[in-house]
Amino acid sequence: MMIAWEHFTPWASLAGGVLIGLAAALFLLFNGRIAGISGILGGLLEWPRGDIAWRIAFLLGLIGAPLAYACFAPLPDVTVDADTATLVVAGLLVGIGTRYGAGCTSGHGVCGLSRRSPRSLVATAAFMAAGFLTVFIVRHLAA
Image (cartoon, rainbow, N blue to C red; front, side, top):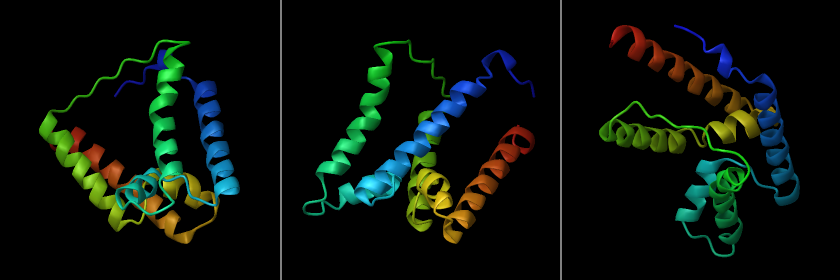
């Protein structure tokens, strides 16, 4: 495995992490809500009365942020090395996993760990272990 050092961007990555943490903290401070996308989207699918506008605004922000960025700099190229069936199965598994795990990586990893939630620590460790195992199987055993 080769590391593409010319694409190593520690300062941009640090700035992005700080912005994500700050946004999650401000969201919790001002709204009393966890900034986990699975909970926000899942709650929108249930159509709770009086709880829709902020969820839609959050999702529009997720879509609008890269569009706003594209006005000032080119978006990076995205390459997906999987066929449609693999992406559909992966998406369904992630969706099922977020329901069983009571949240997604952003909810547990960013928001839960910062609140010292034991459940989020276990969930994040499970996410990471599953990711490591999947990469090992795909790269070394299935190849």
